[in-house]
Length: 432
Image 1: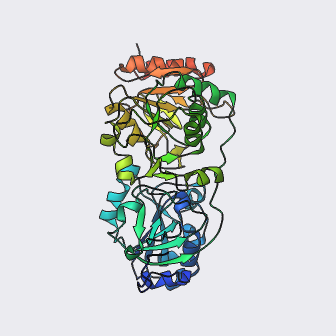
Image 2: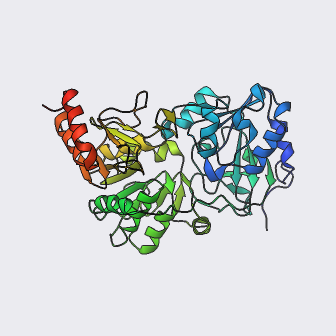
Image 3: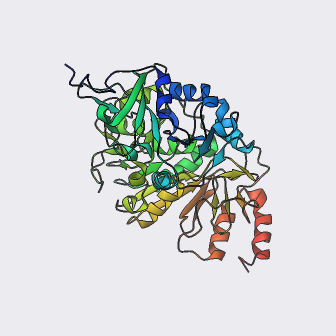
């Protein structure tokens, strides 16, 4: 029996075009990242772009390519990115959209300060009999606006119903439409010998009882797979992946040592395979919470032995990490790397790992460099970086002098670049 009051204006689904009734001139639309993107609603917005006036769409990591991303409608409709994806990356480099530098933890506050928060568009699971919708794979920055700004939802029966602070009642939305399509899947990438070597170096340093944050990709997934024989591990991460699911099913993940949300797997969004999405549905061990809590370094630092694992593009001999730009062109964004690196630094017995192959895939360019590429941003600063790991070893940087750092980083570079790096280190005065 349903308890939804059918007299409520938003009690029943409507056509997706009805969303246009809630998009006034100058509106700021806020959209979840990744799988939380409401595909049909954004297709509708794009199709009617020329009817809009100075509307902006704010989003991290857009999934689906659309003309508005590339500036096709001028000032009628423009995309504002807070992290670049495969589709928005090209659009930004061509000048079709804008990019706002931001740590993931700060995005809710930035949106409150710099936008009108006119309307939130989000994918959701079907309402339960009490009239509550779930944002499913997401909480991210979107959940922080529940009850504080109007929502228009796109209900997809394939979206898992999840738990945490990502549910909202029919009384908190202005409308919803129905759409059915498979959720976007991200298949785990292939693993090579370099990935395996790096993963082993990190896994060997993770003790029982640690709380882990791991990003997505070959190295993080391989590290998680190597922890299946550990005991009483916990996860507090921005991204729930297939690797975390497999770790839970191995029995190594209990969360009993966690200080915050003991026994729960905490994340702010999820992306992976259909198997993962099925796993998340009605799974009470998972909690999807707003990113300004999940990624807050002060919250992370409350955990004992917090371990953060993130990838980077290049590291200089001071230990500065550029994780956003390749050869002078923007590739991604700051994301949550700095959030978790700082949180691990605050944690008692905490450890931060930045992982990278020693070279590009063709071995022509070293990822350990004397200086970052000209104009490249510092994603994680030298005072925060703890361990840097390549297939050649682990450089421990925290508390070490500039000379010690430089020597340690040269020691994990590809052997054919070490002599030149040593020469440059002497020229820069880092070593004598």
